[in-house]
Image 1 (cartoon, rainbow over the protein chains, first blue to last red):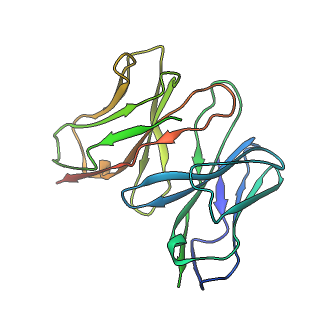
Image 2: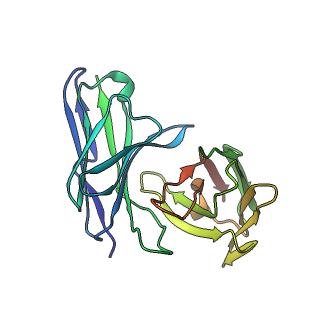
Image 3: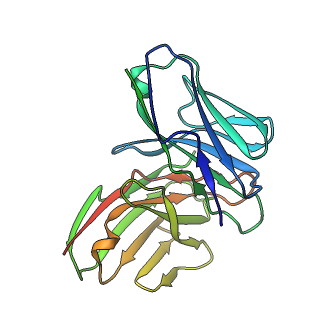
Length: 114
Length: 113
């Protein structure tokens, strides 16, 4: 059974704190993604990675960084959390195999920055 | 880059009615169009997809149509049931290289019993 897990379902942090969100997939997928989900704005891509140690900026990378040291793990880092980063964060993974385009999502982390 | 517009943002129907959600895309190179369903408090999951070499695909009560000339595609749900209530996202992408989908903003479908 396909599985993508995220380190926390709910997280409350203070402004200025460094925040780590972790995502792990057990499907040996090459591609991993971090999205931010806000009401009325859909799923917006923050960063993605197509291989270990490789990363590419998405549509809204400002204020975020990522790390992919192992194939199964993709971390999202908020260097100095701000209140406008309060949101739902979704991780996803997908295969690079021909014809296999489905994205598998994690359960999400609802981050509140106070 | 790709831009995907999705309408309506909210759709309210009575149980048993049909529901249609429409999306348009801008990049003529896009050739893969998935639809994801996100139930309240749960993760998005793929429910159906269509490739550019077909115009329609059906799976039980769900169907998707694609008009490449007009750059739009639609999700059709027949005989809606309360369990169809969810947020639906369309997406568009090219399948070459790293597959990066661009998502629409989502449609909240409410099916009233």
